Image (cartoon, rainbow, N blue to C red; front, side):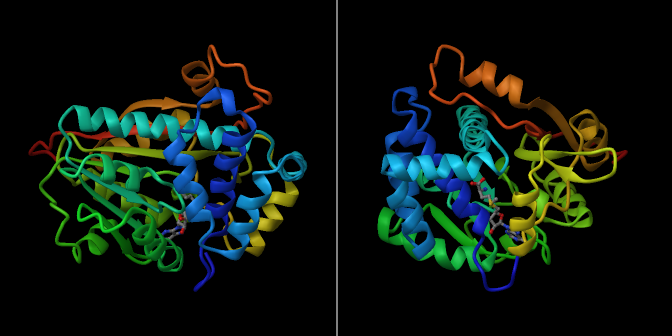
Length: 305
Ligand SMILES: C[S@@+](CC[C@H](N)C(=O)[O-])C[C@H]1O[C@@H](n2cnc3c(N)ncnc32)[C@H](O)[C@@H]1O
């Protein structure tokens, strides 16, 4: 990311969520509170306000679909489904007794706010790049009021591990089982940083989980969706948000095992469609391919480790 500039891709993803919510009203894939918060977070910047206002109109949605058609097709629905999947994983962890949630690189995602406001006994912490944090934090305070169980922290995860950032947060309990989320984040970090981040999560309380997303890697070593778009790639380069890390789905389990993590499950486009689209009729069911959601769990430490 460019220093001092909030994430542009965070605005695009929030726009994708709003697009699907308005275009597929009958699908109920985006909840009413999620849409309301997403739109209000979008309104925290001039560009986001333009996106929010235009997506509420049919011509605006047609324009968004035209832009999508020259970019990676099917990404708005993919973002909605990956969010459904990650939220299900986090809520399942909470049902099993996890009381601490840490979201890394939250962007304009609304999960942290919705969790904190519906369950005051839950401790919810979100870390984001300082520039994105500076845009989101005041807006969250305005729209959700003071939530004593929600903590938004600035931290550049290319320069510090989550543990270093969290050491400044008194609400974080390093001994507590935690549900971590790294959605749409790791592809922007260097391979060394991702390795260190996963190793740090692997050192956390056993039973903790990490819901993350990863793009695959092409045979020539490029990290991208299955059908990349030159226009999208050029835009990401211009914004300093090119993809720098990815892991093939088939090798993730082996890669994370030495870090104290076991792979619980992965869902790519076909499993996401089976889990979340069956029985729904969508105007535009096209789903981008190439990024998967993975759920990892911190394993019990033994003396050998
Ligand atoms: C594509 S957005 C995804 C946002 C959100 N997780 C979602 O999926 O809707 C990428 C997010 O990663 C954050 N990010 C990128 N590089 C980062 C870094 N070095 N340190 C901390 N956060 C970073 C951005 O600020 C942004 O919020």
